[in-house]
Length: 149
Image (cartoon, rainbow, N blue to C red; front, side, top):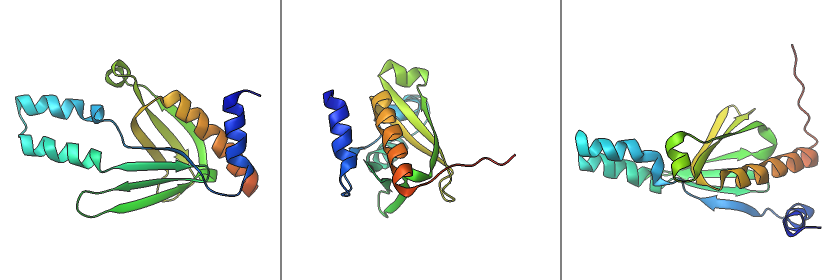
């Protein structure tokens, strides 16, 4: 068994929730705002955008995604992994230049039907970890998706 397969099986064998990834979006997602600061927008506005991005934190565990954001007031939202229906990796041109990507998820969650994790490094690796964690969580919860046409 390869090391990565062993690590994944160890994560899912126990009942304890473990962290798969933790981080914040890259400031590169604000590239156009920073450039426009030079041309039009004032520096305090760009500082505010930087501060908002800096205070947006994601924690992905083997059970859920926890997002905390806010500069003065904080809001924490959670998405149970078994609710994710579809994963999509997006690599816009400017983000590809700096080796970043976005992960989009279509979910059955009423508050977050489309969930996005923007500006992350190694998006391909994280997407694959998420895919495996989602499948495992759906198996544990015995969740099956049925499409009605």
